[in-house]
Image 1 (cartoon, rainbow, N blue to C red):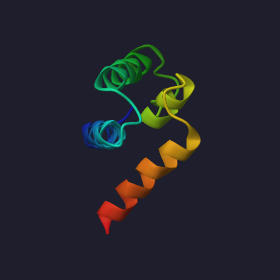
Image 2: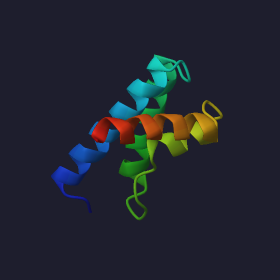
Image 3: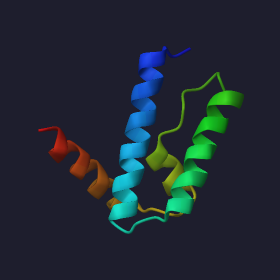
Image 4: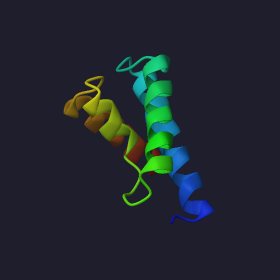
Length: 81
């Protein structure tokens, strides 16, 4: 089970990833909302496995491709410097 700090960090990361993806025009706010809901429901029902990353969910839904995910991750990495 994850502690609250890890959960807070995961939520913060998912929101940051999602906001960048929306701003870049890769996904809509509705797609982000649906992906976040799926991420939460996965945690609730599948406690035996770790939470899916938001990028993984968006990719599986066909809403983002690998290149778009890499662009978002690169922007996150650049902003951390």
